[in-house]
Image (cartoon, rainbow, N blue to C red; front, side, top):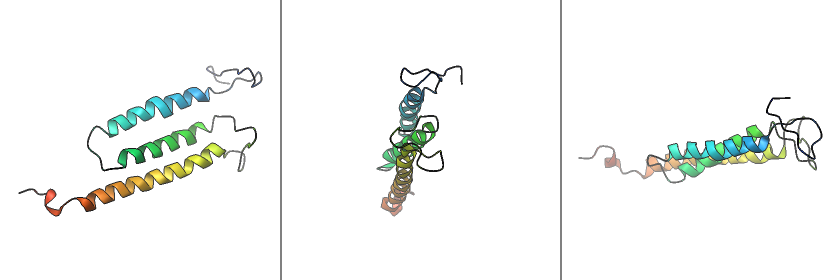
Length: 118
């Protein structure tokens, strides 16, 4: 019971985390700022998209810890893993793979004389 807990009309009398506000902050404002700062300098193709996948998936995975699980699904594993976390994990992995690929491809595509121009 946190001081900023909210009592929802259909959620009983127990105050709950305002997870929708956490999501709006982390997946909206914070993610925008991270991507904006990351994209200020030129990046390889797909790098910003990869960062979006990584951070959106990470923030969603973390916010799911304070969300009530979907009533039709409940917790999927050992009382803590939700469907949102299951779906967020592949986003993080794909984002990491894309980021690795983007930087690796950028290094390979660069001409040999581009690093030391004459």
